[in-house]
Image (tube, rainbow, N blue to C red; front, side):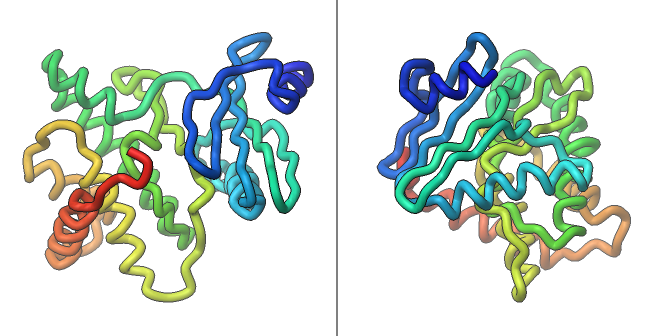
Length: 220
């Protein structure tokens, strides 16, 4: 693994899988699968991601295994182990096409809604909670969702309900197929874990999701 990390650091291993003006993600498949995030002038983001990669598993949430973090004020590299599977947004498209979308929706009720509740019970807002940030090896096998891109997670000091709405609206806005409205109702009920249903929460989620969908993606 050390050889692979050194290869990422020196640019002799891996290829770019995502690039924005301030961040570049590199992937290495051999001798082990690793992902390296290079950041320009954003050492704080790397530090936060390193922090949450260690904290979230203590709450029973799956994240990529952190490997190392090398940073300065101008440039940082954070390396994590590869994660099997793919985003739930892609699984939705396949499930819809192949006729097992209902089964995938049940998976989300059983595995995703309680995981988000666990996150929120610890007063943590994700801020980038979209289906493509939840990777799953095989939802039909009941594999747990793996939370990725966790650097924007934080504990807000006030306006907690606002962040709950934003997280849940992020999921709704990033659906890649048509889901029956009754499923959204079931998802929110499962998230609330038997608490008295709050119709206003559902209305706020749908309103916020519409606003998110109206935004133009920053980097496409």
